[in-house]
Structure formats: structure tokens, C-alpha cells
Image (cartoon, rainbow, N blue to C red; front, side):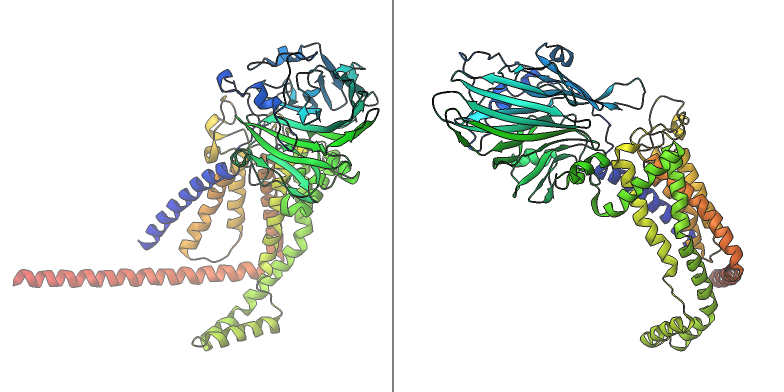
Length: 621
């Protein structure tokens, strides 16, 4: 009866664990869409043009004005705009490189149209490329702008610039220019490399008759509506390196509460990060007056880089150079930029504490993928390599288990002899371990080594752009970084809907439960009935718990379980005394259990008999 009650309690607690795990995973690791869905905007809730574009980025926060009589000024849009209509404006310079395509808006000198050629929106091959930048007031507003603050006033974003070329591409720079009413000539010389870096050289040539005070600036403006969620395992939001230290403490929600975030120390770079994408400004050599992040309201945010004011005499020229990274967080590309001098640029990927394991794992996965031509097969090969590397430790574990079994009689004798003196008992047991050269903790080492590897692989699957949309078997798993799509409740993918949370038991989750159950069955350890029932339940609990994880991670674990089965079978054949000792313990435990049950039954019969006798006596009375 006690065992049944305990089993029911264990089942109830297991269900609560599964439910709590699912809720916790949704809270700490919300399912991040590859590209967040576009949101229809309400004109009434949009900030005015002056709120978004007219506010000066100068450190003194002087409001920039747009005088109506300045030539070249156009009316700012009054409400949401259609993306296709905005991109059809002829006042644009085309951007075309091996990795990105888009255009530069000559109105405001903004880079507000950028798509990533090598990355699709979804796993469907006919889906379009990922859009990173989009014009102001479009649903996916996200752009970079280069400009100037002169005499404390920002040059309006409505000014139209002139371009000396039609296409910006590697080896083909384009210079944007405009001249103000006083004769000051402003220029932004843009160049782009083969990857994701744009270099902007901003200059102000004072052809007027009087000195001016000028400040070049750069900014990135974006909506959080299309941002991926900020997760415990992967930061999304404002990010940068200041004073040689990575700064990423705030999500968009937290920055909205703060209003502004001005980190201490010189900025090496700053911008906004998503799960797979990054936009970042890299300051030049000049001194800066204001660098940081701010909330503009209505889920709009901005990162600012404003250089220190400089006096430009008549006939003089002011020049500053800023770089803009806008693209995918490919670790190899980021590391190359870091090697070229951008401090901790590779930290834009949230590797965390296990970076020392994660990056070698990713490198090895790349090499295996080149060999096998499939990242799923690469994960299987990686698992084989890891288990082969840990095999000597596993052998040592089994040898230690055999030694522990051999010293069990001596240990029991010590425990019986010193049962009233626990301190002396522990000393004698430690001496026994030393004399017999037994390490009771040796069996834990393989598990302890597996934990950081398992977690590191999880982060690699979630964070590395290489794993995004990588298939294993085309008709089944089309994205190893996403959960297994073939689930029981949607008839393994035949029905057109996805099953959420821990209910989404797929093929890999089932294989995980079965292979883990087999590994437990193969282990002949003697246990009491309650332990046995818990161990029988554990594989199926883990099947539910692991179902929402990335398919690549489950593939690793299933392969590891299969290899464990083979390894245990081999090692038990090498150490038959382990199985024999365990079987002997099982038999002894079964006899003890039968004896206890018989004693309980006999005690119950006696109690029942006494009650009956007492009832008869009372009846006679």
C-alpha cells in the first residue's frame, strides 16, 4: 500500500515536473521566430516625424529644426508607409555584394534597405531572403543613418543628397554630397567589403566665410516589433563593447523603462543584436561626445554615436570614419573582424561560459559537415568521436565499479563494527578505499564530463548561423535548430499544424525514451521497488521534457544512448563479476522483500484474528 501511494506521488510529481519545465522553458527560452512577423501599425499610435527624426543626437539634446525655406527639404511621411512603395522611390543607390543586396536612400543619407542573400526567411526554398533593414515608418523599420550636427543643430533627415554613382559594391565606392546655404560641403564616402561591413568617411569642407562647429554622427534606428525575444541563453537587444568589456544587460523592455543607457568607457562598437543578425557601429579614431542607447517610445530604439564638436575654420575640412556592420552573426566572419582590430567583436554571439568548448565543437561540426555533406550526419559523427574520447574513462568507471563490488563485504563489516562511531567508520572506509586503490567517485566522471559538452552543443545548435535551416533528412527534419516537426498529435507531420510544448512528442523524442529505457534495463543494478519504479518512469519523463528541444540535440542524445548500449554490453562482457554480483544482490533483495511481505501478511492476519475474537466475546456478553 505504501509503495502504491509512493508511486502515485512520483507520477504526480513527474507530471508537475513536465508541466513546470514547459512553463519554465517558455519563460526563459521563448520560441524565437527566425524572422518576427510583421505587425500592422496604427497611424494614431506612431510617433511624429520630429519625435523620431528631428531630435538632435548632440549631447546637449538640442531639438533639430527643419526650416521650410531650406532648399531640398521634403515633407516627412505622416503615417505608416508601404515597403514596396518606399523602395520604388528613384532617389536610391543600389547595394550589391556577394552576401547582401539593397539600396541607400538619398533622402537623409540612410541605409534603410538591406536583405541577406544567403539566408532565407523560412525553411521553404521559395521564401525570400531575410530582410534586415527597412525604411522608416514601414512595419519593419530598421535603418542606419550618417549625418552632421552643425552649430548644435542636426542637418534634417529630410535633406536630399547627391550620389556620384548608381551602385555600391566591393571595389566600387559611392560618395554622397550636399551643400548648405552657407557654402559648407558635406560628404559621406561609402565603401563596402565582400561580407557585411560598410565604411563611411564623413567630411565637412568649410567653403563659407566663417568658422563652424561641426559634429559627424551615426545612428541605428529600429523597431522592437520584429526583434527576436531576449533569452537567458541568447541575448537580443542593445549590445556593445565599452572600455574593453561586453555590455548587454538590457532587453528592449528594460531599455524602454530606463529611457537611456550610456555605458562607461570608450566604445569599441555598439548596436542591436538578434538571435542570428547584428547591426553595429564601429567608431573611428576621433573623440566622441555621446555614445549609447535610447528608447524613442512606441517600441522604437536607437543607438547613437556622436563625435566631439570641432571647430572648422573657413577653408578647413573635418573628417571622421565610422564603420557599420549589418549582417549575419557568422562566427568566422566576426572573428576575422575581431582580429583586424574590433575589440571582442566575436562576443556579439552569446557564447557564455562554455565558449572554450562551444567554438571547438562548432569548428569540428563544420569539418565533419564538409566530410559528410550533412549537419545531421556530422552530429552523429561528433557523438561517436566524443564517446570514443570518453571510452577510456568509461572503462575506468567499470573497473572501479568492479572493485567497489569486491570490497562490499569488507565495507559492510566495517559499518557493522563501527555502527556507533560514525567518524571512525568513515575513517576506516577511507582507509579501505586507499588500501584497495578504489575511487568511489570514478563512476561520476563520465556524466560530469558529458554535462558541459551537452550544454555546449545545445548552445551551438541555437546560436550558430551554420545550423539555421540545416536539414537532416529532407522529408522529415528540415531544420536541426528547431524541434522535431514529426509529432504524434499531428500524425508525424501529415496534419498541417504544429503541436506546442511538451505535448509535441516526435520521433526523436520517442527514440530517446526507448533507448534510455534500454540502457536502464541493461544496467543490472539492484534497487528497492520504489527506486525501480522511478527508474522505469525516468526515460518517459525525459521524453516529454526533451521534446521541445532542437532536433539536433535529440539526435545527439539518441546516438549517445545507442553507443552507450553497445559500450555497456561490451564492458559487462569484460567484467562479468559486476553482472553476477548485481544478480546476487537482486536475488537477496527479492528474498528480503518476500520475507517482509510475508511478515506483514502474518501480522495482518493476527490483527484480524484478534479483532474477530474480540468481536465474538463482545457478542456473547
